[in-house]
Each structure stands twice: as structure tokens, then as C-alpha cells.
Length: 292
Length: 179
Image (cartoon, rainbow over all chains, first blue to last red; front, top):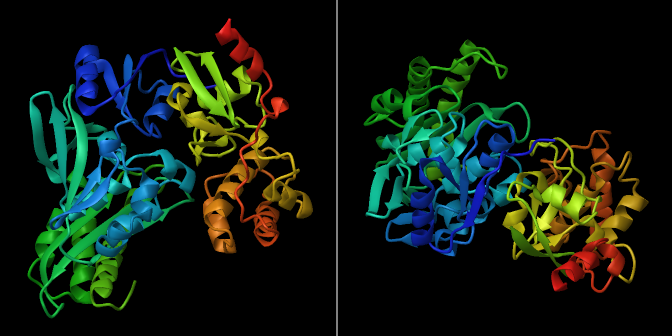
């Protein structure tokens, strides 16, 4: 039987209360919402926080809304809620694609969007999807709020810029186009990806040239979950199959997968390239109304 | 710390350690052993119960997180009028072999039918994709859920009321609190 080590448990009544509790318990305290990553780590004693601050009651962090040309996602929105959201399905198909493939439906009922990002697992799907989307993360502390571009959010495996005493409260995503998609290869349902890639494209008016592009990668050691070199190659070029294959080749060249039980390094590198090309192809087809 | 939960329609108050998992709370504190404890890692899904009407894996939820919440286990499916159609479906279609995954499959199946009274086979397979049947009896599990869909399962199961036997040990817990 796996049982976590002992800890103090506190239920936060508001964001201010959560911040006060985090300040009181210090750097060994952890925030818990869905707990779908943290609790297994605690059971395995890979994490032994001295205190858990439960933010499940902070309903103001549980909303999905459109604010101007941005989508606002509260930190404790559940995966299942993001997947079911009509506004997400309409404007940001990359998030719907990714959510369909994250864990399994029961885990998605509990796990939260903010928890996934703060866990900063190097194989996490939403980190790559939001990196492709150039999301902005709103981090609150007793001193106020700060906005962090997602590409500056991750500092290493399981590490983010969120300091002790701070709380991720909101994820803001620009709604610019319908051209996005996410592609993943996993060994079985609910597993981490062998490799996965997300693509977001802004095309010109004729939909045949790439004005701006975001390419996210996960599980293959891409810095900040981004295939930046592939983005640079594609920007300003035709939205053509040839260019998408080239972007995939560049992405595969610049990522750093490791051989493990999910596959050898060269296989993962090959997959990264193929998945980047597929995601770009699907995103473009969607924007041209050729594919759902 | 003291928590108060409503389990299968009955309120109970207990003193628990913060590190106690919901699955052990249900099994060891309330004696509701219908909720099975399987892999301990959130992979097998044998421990699925409803927390505020949403299926969750009870090995990855703390009991203290259920404070003030409504919990429903397989013991709460049967009503005074008999088996829930989802249970009847598993009887009719031989949906259980060893039975280990069955309570969780029933809870997920019932929840699915509450939200989609006529699910396709694909939808059913997606819904139970995070739950492992060690006998590999998925064919009959899917047929059982379809059977329930075809035999008037559209009405959500009523909350089991006033069935003292539904939650063994709960009455004594309530009495302890009063004392």
C-alpha cells in the first residue's frame, strides 16, 4: 500500500488566503488542486511536502471565458472542462486535440490545467500546446500579479519560475486563428507520449503563406517545449507540404530525446519530425476548411 | 482532522489523517469494500467512485478533499426498486468475470448513461479506457453498458435513501459524533 508521508493540510478560502497559507508554511509547502501528479509522487515519496494548500474551493479560478481576443483559462479548470468547452473547440482545436490524448477520461475529470503546467513534467502535453500558442501565465503573490510568457515559464524538468509564496492563477491564450493541431504517439491510452507535437499557424489572407507559427514539442527534450529553429525556417514561407517536411526535419535535428523504455533516441527523433509535419499539415487543412 | 461527507446519500463525520486516501477511507473506515483498491498508481481504475457526481480514481484523492462533498459508491447504485439497469446489464450480458473491475465499471457506465443515454460502442470504449479489466472481458462490459442503454437506463439512478445497510458502520460513526 502506498501512503504519503505526513503533512499539514489546509483548505484555502480565497487566493489571498492561499497566498497567506503558502507564506506561513514556507518553501516546503505545495499547492494541490487535482492532485493527479502530486499525489502519486507523494505516495512514491518522490515528493514530501510538509504542507498541502488545497485550492479546489477557489471557484474564481475555475472559469473559461473570452476576454477581447484572448481566451482566459482559470488555473483549476479541469482537463475534462477544457475538452468539453465549445469556445475552445471552435477557436483552439490544438487544445481539444491535446486534451483528448491526456491521461484517461477519469483522470481528466480531476486533473487541472494549471497543475499540469506547474508540474512541468518534461513529457507533459499541455506545456507543448500552450508553448505553441504563446500563452501568457498570470502568477499572483502577496505583492501583486506578474505575467510570464510560457516560453520563459519552464526552467528545467519539474521546475518553473513560480517562486515559493506564488500561485499560478490564470492562463491567457491569444485567439488568432483556427489553424492549430496536436499530434501524439503513445504506447497505450493514458501513457505519456513517446513524442508529441503541436502547431499553430497564422496564414496570410490567401491562406498560402505562413505569417507566424508556433511549434510545440514534448517528450523529446526540446528546450522550453518549443521547436524554435523550425519556426524560424517556416516563418514567411509558403504553407506547403514541402516546407512542412523541412520544418519537421529541422525540429527533429534540434531536439534532444533520450533512449528509455518508450523507445530509442533515433526513433523518437524520427517521430518528432513526422509529428511536426503532420501537425502543420492538419492545422493548415483546418484553416482552409478542408478538415475538422 | 474531522471531515463530513455524504456517502450514498447518508451524512457521516469521521476523524481522519490528512494523508488518508479516499479509497482507504471508504473501505477501512466505512466498510464499503465494493470500491476496489487495485494498482495504487491511478492506472487501473478499479477504485472509481463519484465525487460530487463526477467519476474519480479514489486512490488519487485524499479523504480530506471529500470534506463537504457528495460521494457515491457501487453500494449506492441499487435502489428500493431493485438493481440499477446498469447492474442488470452486467447480469444479462455476463459483463463480469472475476469481478474485480466491475464496481468501477458500473460507476463509470452509470455516469456515462446519465450524460449520454444512447452511447455508441466507441463512446463506451473511450469512457472506460482508463479502467483495466484483467480478464480482458471488455467485449461483454461494452455489451452490458449497451444493454442498459437499450433497457430504460435513461433516468439517473436515484440517490439511495434510508437504506441503513448501504453504508455499514456509518450509523455508529454518526452516533459517535453525537456522543
